[in-house]
Length: 388
Image (cartoon, rainbow, N blue to C red; front, side, top):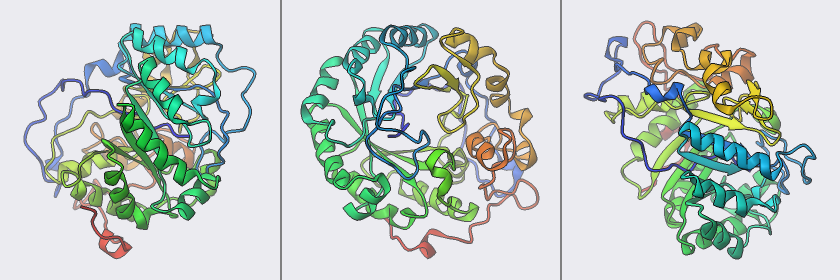
């Protein structure tokens, strides 16, 4: 199971990114205006089709179970959710789980999303349900991309992480089938203390598989992931800078999840600004029972699609409005000159402090004084070399 959004064609920027900036002092932070559409509709909507999944992933935010829940959205309710997303102007509709293949109506729902002009993508689990025939069926229904999880560069590490012997081999076979079916392939990797020193090797494997995008998730301690120890602030910073160095030297795009500080690091590296999409800000998650969340990793429900229109919840709920307002951030996030561009992981802040507006607990950047981020755990000290 993963919540990885496979990116649709990028929308035209609603602001001039301007020249690159160095962040040696807070004065150098870029002037960043949020996209006006952020208040109107999420660019990305993740729908947790089911919590049923045969894997037992160590980090699973959903604490997925083998069987489907009796209160899951029915097929007609799922059609209505897709219609509401399309009517709002959502671009990318992600079918996730659990394992979406546990739903017998999945292909019908993908087809409906495609018919409504959405960009459907699927994040299935690498179990015996994920066959080449089903991957071809996804393509025939109108899916544009498939995201597969790969959390190690060899079977022992990945299979232990996923709780299923043979998951690594199935993932590689599925990746080949995705490419053969003409679908875009994204590989998702969750960074934890179990694998962060092997990211360079995983990156090489991502390239070998022909993926168009590598989505790097940074652990939020929620669900089963609460039992895992996250990286320190300095280790997060080291990985961000390593990824920024890697971009442009590998044959795939790199995106991050629950790592908004990576946008700040890209600015430090002289890269163009990226839209500040984050929890509740042009991003929305709908659970298997219809609850509406800012993110699958931020378990604060703002409404339910069975009770109120999705557009009303996204646009008007106090929680979503607060998350889209950088002025409400607390601690050093509230003082940070990068708060509109970054804003910190609201999911991680909630998981570690109980307050979704608290400062990001694993951010090394100090907005006061030098304005530099502590990088004592430099990537070179961590072990891996550079993937090329």
